[in-house]
Image (cartoon, rainbow, N blue to C red):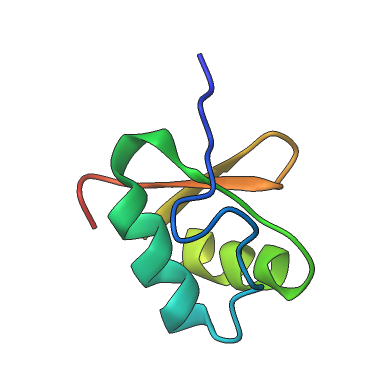
Length: 67
């Protein structure tokens, strides 16, 4: 089951750094976070570092083991 939500605002602004994105994904817990624009690249970098798991064809991310 997938449940990915925007957490910080109704219409969130795109995250400008890998660290900012990771902080947001971590705050989402197990529900995950939809990625857009440059966030997809940041998400791939975080996945390669073993920090997040990508799903939905790489357009959503969830934290791995509590980050």
